[in-house]
Each structure stands twice: as structure tokens, then as C-alpha cells.
Length: 516
Image 1 (spheres, one colour):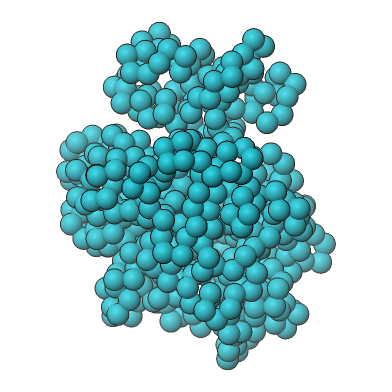
Image 2: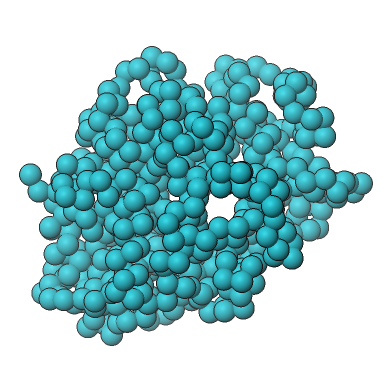
């Protein structure tokens, strides 16, 4: 059976999607799009995501997958900053931002698929096709397939979320032939694809996170390039995830810890309902995973859970399997071959093993990068010569395994003491009746910052602010117990399930007349 990509009830074989990409590449070339240019991919998870991304590479252009949660102003910034020469966009995403698309930029509309309409509760009006704009599939049919692309496509130019100001476009230098081979090999290694390289048709890769994020983007596009079978989820839902694994005999998944948390909170009868025996390789990253959560996942799914640390700028720089993690609970792995990894102080000086500081790293196999249009910002990210900071705080143990404490931007300094919210969140997740939580710093006149916890209860749970504090006092030092506890029926989330902590934190700082 030919390898396929499935989204909802729709299925297309990889060969068909590849041919469509080649036709679109001819169309892009006729528009004058070529090496070094940018095609903006403003799409949810869909077939067209693979087609448009591959088509950009076939003319030597960067594909820029845009975060479609952006406001109109944020979308305008990405379009203008990237200099996008074309935009491929779902119909429902077009309407809210149509007025900020730069004049004269070619726009191609992809019909919003039924599974996306259902998953997001979209109305027929929201998903209507705009008049006067070419439809993606009608347009690409008018061109013959492009015979050959450049020897080395530049890949995706991802815009990373900034801690302040606008996001930054990570524009990697054109790769050498060796580097172009090394990048997919690195992705295949950390995603577990490498052991199946001879038989990719036997793999079933599930993509539960939005492909505008760098890790799902890489996981999906490399799987597509290898010719594996791919299942696209329009958005993450815990039980639907389990159902997809059973139905499609999924073998490989890239996940984030929040997904684990939400899966573990399912009722036991739901967790036992589905056959997960097809799973072979689960890998996660993007945030610290609470130790008790990962223990529970390994106990449930077996020693098939792997972890890495890295970022859009660096690629993956550490890795560990379940056996290594069980010997070093809490680690995010040891340095991969070709990775440089250090923990440094505020002056960029390397710290001794066990000392906590800022993590700086680099994967030598990847070409260097800059932040598009801002070389100075790139220079500031180099906190130690040749090594990049991703904004994380952590330490190395005596065996060279790396541990994360928190994001530098999330670290709270209260009365001169460093406090890591991730540690507090990990303890809160053990509280009976708690569905999810976020801990962050808010302004405090006396101490500079104080801790605030925003909590979402499970249905039917009944506990209050004093219960949260009492629970934490038994488990962490008193100064780490949040002074303020608030409750929400729902927490703002990305489609991966990860909490939009910035949306919770910003109102407190803005009310104090300060920006973060």
C-alpha cells in the first residue's frame, strides 16, 4: 500500500501530495519566487501544509509557517518582516487578517477542511471562500510539475515567540550538502525514524501539535520526506488521541509534557479502553516534564518514551531514552554527538557541574543562522562565544546529564531570591481534583515580584485558595508558596495543550503600568 497522509476522514497518498507540490513550485517560479525568498504558510494541519512547504523548497525559497493564533497586527508583522512573496492560507484564517496582507502579495486560499471546522466549532460563514482570490488546488492544477529543485532547499524560517516585542524569524544560512544531509538525520534520530529508514511505509507518525511550531514542523516534514504514513490531528484532544493510536496503529509521536498531563487525568476506564500496543517511539520536549508525570507515563506505555532538549535556533542538542531517564530522573538528556553544551553565569563564564545557570549550546552539524533583519539580536543571543542561549536555566550533573529548572523569563526574583515556577507547578499537579495550573510572577512593591497561581479544577472538584496553599506548604519551602491564588474555568491554551502563560501574566503587569 502506498504511503499516505490522513486528516479526519480524508486520505491522500504521499505521491499525489508530492506531485501537487511540484506543480505549485512551477507556479511559484512563474511568480518570480526563487532562492532566498519566503512563502508564508498560514495553515492549520492539512495536506496543503506539506504541499506549500515542499513547493517553496523546490524553488529554493524558505517556507514560513505562521502562528495563526496571531492578532491581525502580529500577522502583519510576520508578513512584512519576512518579505513573503506569496501567502497560502485557510479560508477561515484569511477573513480576520485580510486587511493587513501587504498590497500586491499573491494569496492562495485553501478551503477549510471539515475536520478543522468541527474541531474548532467554526460556522459556515467563518469558513466561507472569499471572492476574487485563487483557490490553491485550482491554481496549482494549471501548471506542470517542476522537474527539479535546488540541490539543497533552505527549509523553514520559523518565527519564535519573543519574551518581549515581536517574534524573531530564525533564518538559517544555506546548508552545505553535508549539512543538508545531517539535519534530517538528526531529526530522524531524535524522532525515532532512523531505525525504520529501510521500511518507512511501516511507520505511522501521528502529528498532534500544530505544525507552525518548529518541532512538529520538523517531525512532520521529515516524515513526509521519508515517505512514512502520517496522521494529522486538527487539535489535541486526549481521548481522540488514544482513539487515533488504536485506529491507525500509530508507531511514532512527538509530544509535549502538557499532553502527558491531560492524558493522565483521563478516567481509568478511558485509559484502559484503547489498545496502544502499536506505539514504538514517543519523544517529547518543549518544557520541563514533572518527574511524577514521566514516571506515570513510562509505567503506562512502557520504556518507549524519549526526550530531547533544543530549540529552533539550535536543533536538538541533548537526548535520553527511558532507561537513562530512570537512572537520572528529571534529566532532559546528555549531549548528542556534534553538540556543544555548557552552563554559564551572567558573564558567560562556564560553571562547575551541579551549579545552576543559563544553558548555552550549539549543534555543529547545522549551518549558522541569524534573526531575519536583526543581526544585532543574533549577536546578543550568543551568551558565550559560538554558543546560543535559548533562555533556559539549568545545570549538568556529574555524568553530563542536563536538567532544566525553568525558563529564564519565567524565573521569579522575589526579595532577591530566585524561584522557579516549574517546580511549584510540578507539585501542584499532584493535587487531587486539579486539572491544570500556571504559576508566574506578578508585581510586588516590597519584594519586586510575588508568586501567583492560576488553577483550573477538575469537574466536580471543590477546593479553595487555602487548600492550595496548605497542599503546597507540605511539599515546598514557604517562600515558594504563591501569595495569590486564582481560579479559572478554563486556561488559555495553544493547540498542543500548552498554556498561554503570557496571556495570564500580562494583565497584572499592565495594570501596574509595566511591560514584561
